[in-house]
Each structure stands twice: as C-alpha cells, then as structure tokens.
Length: 93
Image (cartoon, rainbow, N blue to C red):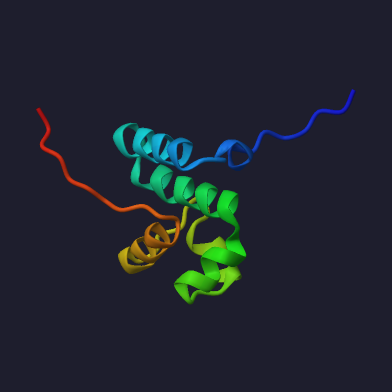
C-alpha cells in the first residue's frame, strides 16, 4: 500500500474553495498561517503563472511564502491580486 503526503494545494481547485480556505485562515489563523496559506493557493494555481503575473521569480515566491517567512506587504498584495483575491475589512461585532 502506497501512502502519499497530504497537500492542501491538490484540493484548492475552484475560486470558491480558494476563497473559503483563505477566509478560514484569515479568521482563525496566525499571520504566519496566512502567509503559508497564500503559498498553498499560489502552488495550486501554478507558481510559474503567479511569478509571471507578479514580476517576481519562482524561487523568491517559494521563499516569501514559506513557513517562517516574513514577506513584505507589497509582495502579499501582488500575490493576492495574481490569485484573484483582495483584502476586505468588515466590522467585528
């Protein structure tokens, strides 16, 4: 029996799934979790495509979106735009 390693990127196959995943992480995760989650989404879409759209190299994207990374806010915004997302603020009740 062969067991493969779980990769969330394999399941992020629609805009709705991606949005639900990122919203859950934004609501319940840490800032580090958010960076890693954006990396998972970028991997699911295709790191080469994201690199092309952001003007960043693939190696720098992998580094910026890895566990423990502290990317610049501008990098996060470029990647969010490339994956078709945006940040929206709503009041906390």
